[in-house]
Structures are given as C-alpha cells and as structure tokens.
Length: 360
Image 1 (tube, helix red, strand yellow):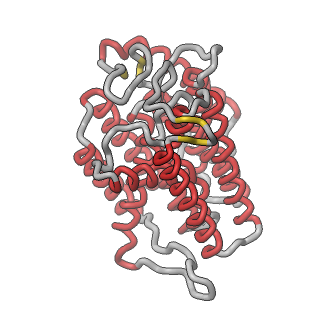
Image 2: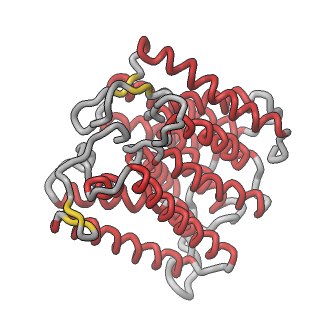
C-alpha cells in the first residue's frame, strides 16, 4: 500500500484544491465562516473548510485502494467522527467540556476496537526495564490522544502555522516509517494527508501569492491531531519503529506550547481553556516579529526537534536520556515564557497588550 501509483498522489493534491474551492463557495450559506470578535482579530469573514476538504479528498483517493484492514477502517471512522465534531464546533462553538468528552469517547472506541494502546512508555530510568502500564494502558492512551488532539487544535491561531507544523511532523514521520519498513497502511494515510496539507497551505500561507484565504478549522485540526497521535501510538508499540520518547520530540512545538499555556492560565487563576494570546506565536507577534518571521521561527524550532528525534532513533539513544532532554527543554521554554510575560519584554522588545491584523 505504500507503493501507490503517482497518480494517487497527484489526485490528492488536485482534488484538495477543487474541494477547497467548492466548499469555500458553499461556506457562507452553511455558516462555516470564522468571524472576528473576542480573541479573534483577523480581518473579515474567512471560510473554515480547509481541513474538511483535505479529509474528503483523502477519503475519495483511498476509496480506490483495495484491502482496507480493520485498523485502517477504524482510523478513518475516528477521523470522520472527529471531523463531524469539528464541523459542529466551527458552526455552534461547543463548550470545551462537551467537546473533550466527545473526543474521549471517539478515541476510546477506536483504541478499544483496534486493540491499540500505549502499553509501554519505554525505559524512563537508567538500567531498568521498560515501564509497562498493564490495566492503565487504555485510559492513559485515551488521555494522551485527547491531549495531542487538543494540543494541535490550540496552536491553530495564525496563518500557515498549523498546516506547516503538520507537514513538518507528518512528513519526516512518514519517511521514517517507510525507512523502518513499518506496517504500510497508516503511514500511507499519513502521506496522503500530508500531500493534501501542502495543497491547503497554498490557500493559507501568509504570502501574497496564496490563492484565497481559508482556515483549517476544527474539522481539520481534530482529526489531523488524532491521526498524528494514533500513528505515533501504533509505531511506538507494535513494530517498535519509534521509541515512545521520540514521539515527544516529534510533537515538540504543539505539546510544549500548549502545556505551558495551560499551566500559566491555571497559575493565574484562569480557566485552562479560556481564550487569550499567550501562545508562543502570540508572544512573538506581540514582541514585534512579523507573521512570516514568527512562522519561520516556529518551523525552525520544530525542525530542530524533529532532527533530535531522528538522531536519537538512528543512534539508539536510551529512552531516559531522550525524555530527560525533552523535559529540560520544555521546562526551560516554559520558564522563558513566564519571564517574558512578567517582564513584558522579549529580546529587548516590549510586548504589545495584544495583536491583531489579517493573519491572526
């Protein structure tokens, strides 16, 4: 299944463009428009159909592929249900509590039916065997996947950011799994969606030559975060193509940024899911970096994290070392964010109270 004819990849790229154009035309009537207001400061109403287009294009292309396994069917079912949940959230702005409950139920159903779970988190202590989760494996896996889904969803706050992060995570992961000769089905889905996301970026990147501005929407971020998390669970547990700690590095920007924001909100007595401008990309923008400069910084940081993950895999770095380095980096960046907010300065740049503009 990894050796798809080139026509499938081309069809995914072209079909994504066609569906984005069609859905963007339908979006005002269906109410799938993102309107400025509250913590949203973009200019004008923007269709939030990019993720839906990518998902539909992927499903259509994959219908031409025979011999779907039960695991693949369940994966696509989970992505479809999360896409519907995202559409409802885009349209009706669901509460965080009900949205996360629905996510947990969908993730639990897919993991339970497919038999996938994080039954081991690796050898996190030097000289000891890998830690086995036993009966706690399934609930811990649901917690982790819901966390990944929401981490990816929460970094979707600036043109080009979520799409670029997906490509920088999924692309290297896809090629690594091919190199490691993993079970071909989920990596192929990852590859097809990556091609679709490249097409989407031509509509979303903050550059003048983009076709027309569209957003990914929760209908995209929820199933795409789920796909990333599920592929990482499978490849770190079944065929051992990845170590569990390398998955942390592959998801570095979304995980570190989201956990840091949640902790800072809680420490300030706010709701963990209150809307504000405390994400890393917000701090960079408030410090006077342009949208393009902020996007470039995020991409370089994510690329560095991916390089560390691949270096560790190629050289067999122990789990405890990879985990310790990740925690050092994560706590250092969290401390930096706290310091920046308290001082109101980043690299001698005074932070604005908030940022707006056409790309945020």
